[in-house]
Amino acid sequence: METILLELLVLTFVIHLIDTLSYSVRLNSVKSGQFALPFSLFNLFVLVSRTANTFQAPLIGGIIGASISRGIDPIDDLRKVIFAATIGTLFGILLIPTFLKVFEIAVKRLETTGSVPFLVVEALQVNNIKRMVKSATRPSKTMLLRLRYREIPKRLLIINALVTGIYTIGVLAANYSALLVTEQHRLAAAGSSGLINGLATILLTLFIDPKSAIITDQALRGNRPYGDVKALVVLLITTKLLGTLLGQVLFLPAAKLIASFYGS
Figure 1 (cartoon, rainbow, N blue to C red):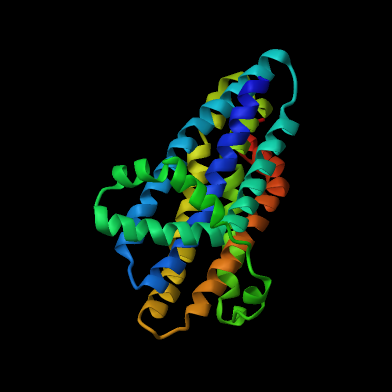
Figure 2 (figure 1 turned 45 degrees about the vertical axis):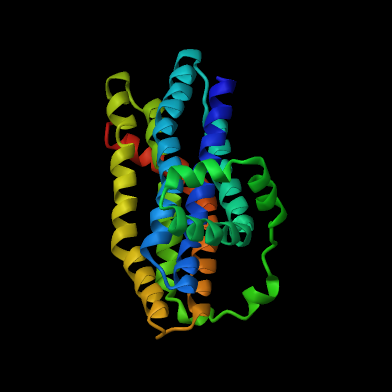
């Protein structure tokens, strides 16, 4: 069970690290004046994240199954998983300046080579890995203080924190709710994770993506300063971090709510 937990912690860390870095792709798009090519390259990173996500549910199910057979409560282990999401997000925030440097070079190389597999092989060469490490850049506090945060809708940020909280604990809460219901309803309760994450995806699609895209497109056309997109990204990743912390609060009530639908 300890091995499964460790694997789950690493996967959760990677998923939220990559999700956090994805916010910064908007900055590269506006700065370079390109949209399709940066997002085409970033699909590679998203593929890694989504692949990791497919392994998350079985690992959580393994922990729940082992806990049921041993008669123990795994809530502390599941809270560690939520905390791994917070740490992954925090590391992603710290890595954004470095990621943007490397990503800009990668986009230019992709434009030249036209091959993502070739780019991956090239990036994994020892000399290139050393260059990436040397290009590490710390976030600039001065830059953050100069941004026009008032231009970013506050409702967008509140919804982003809420959606992140739901997304962070969706699979965890659904699986944990299996401990709170009778045996005949356990599979149904655990299967509710798709419904919860689906709700989070709908909220993301309806309220966050469109407004973020409008701000980014306006900056691409020159109708907004580049700083507005920076402010957008900074506030979105900040509320994403807060959302993972909110997940700690939502976790148990969400599990009990799910269980109530199955007559716990």
